[in-house]
Length: 271
Image (tube, rainbow, N blue to C red):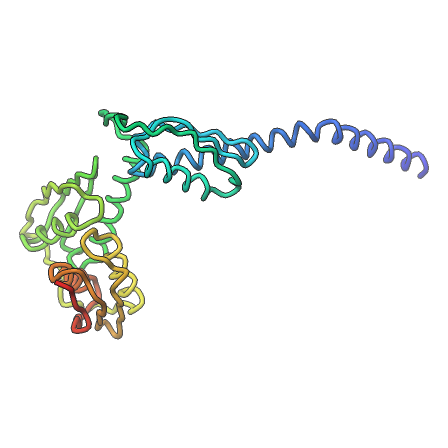
């Protein structure tokens, strides 16, 4: 027993010695990893920002301090870079050394999309696919959605011209879309979509999808619209900017699966 205790004590002493020797190394390594992670987070945020992705900005982080260098064309871009860095978890100080150059020309768009462009296009594609999935016209469409540089291409089949036109309109009204090439082909043998909204869909699901449709749209300010659903009957309330925006808000709600009717008397517009 005594020998075992001596052996255990000796092993513990050796372990404590190794830890005391290697702790600074482990600490340095951990800090370097944190620095690199924070640098990556800030740089990714810049790459995703449509206002900064074309600018020449470099980021270094050292123990919570972010140093920004490079060139931008305006003070607004420089301030935005600071705000993004400050909003990164663990960053306690930002040294913004970015130079504002009035004649600075952002990097020209090449043949290959940037990381931010790819993310934007993927987000647009996902938004359109979701809106089609929620729509009463979904069963009448077999649609492939492809987006590049904000230009959307729709391929597949539709049961009639109305379903094809609706898919094109839905894509056009999606945030970030620059143009839509609607190549859907009419298939008269395909059964038409069920537009009577006879399906039994949960009211909470309907409300959520209408709100999401507004969020994805670049022509409707969904934050100003209150949506309530009871037994498939939707009521909209709020004030919008124009009659066109109001009409689109009603149309988007009417075309969500499960909606039986839409009461829009609570909607108003300023123009």
